[in-house]
Image 1 (cartoon, rainbow, N blue to C red):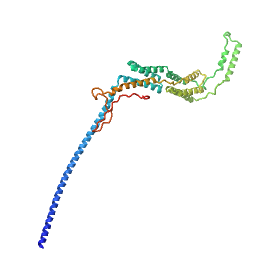
Image 2: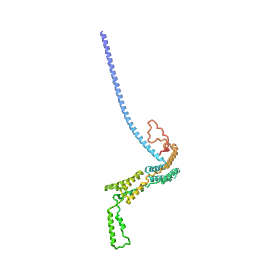
Image 3: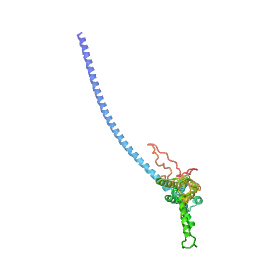
Image 4: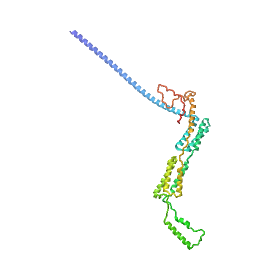
Length: 382
């Protein structure tokens, strides 16, 4: 029993020993693995830090590349504009100048009614075309000449002359007499005309002449006591000095607004202002005065004048210009589709438009199709 117990105890001690040895080995292995994992984690952290630094440097480089690409696109757009500017021929510049002149003439006629400016613009365009002496400009020149002749034959309004006449009326307003301040005819002066002695009468006074003169003086004095006047209109309006001043100033304002309407070619407002000024003069001023009568006649003449006259538009010149531009575009179209000699770098064909977005990395941008620089104008468009 003792031996068995001793053997069991030895076996149990051996198992405990083996168990402790295994635990120690496991602990050492776990410690080694933990140390290896710590070193791997440190290495991973170092590599991650390096990757972050490389990403930051790459981002900086990408930003610099984007800025460089933007600057390059701006330069490409500027170069494209310069290329288009220098690629235009002399004929294109002449046609562009003629188009600008015809457009200015049409605007002056339609918006401002300025016949002189439109005529000068058309004559200048015709002179520039005549200086070139090109056969392709003959149709446009003929259209310009016909439009110039129509403008010269159209009736015109003497705007500066009418404005000067209104200015003269403005200066005359302060000198016009009012109706209530007009002087009546002196009957004594009328009586004196018949009381004058005849030329053949004797120079020596006599009793009869003295009595006749005395009776005439008494009769003239009696005539001055009572005055009878016939008024063809209502009683003249009595105005205070301040009201008289306001009346004259309002009359000037009416004439000034009439002049503004004249410059704006507004015939309705022009006639209405002149009619109002004429009504005020007939009501408040003395119509027996020659200056008032002359002013009324001048206002009536100005009121009857037409202020706005319909001006012919240069339609033939615009149509001939559109036809010339269409022919020029048609003649240049096959030339623009042909590649220029010396490679694609010197030609405009296959060139991407300025400001186009760059192709993404790893992809090639599709080649832009060759297109003409100018398309023929569509009917009705400018």
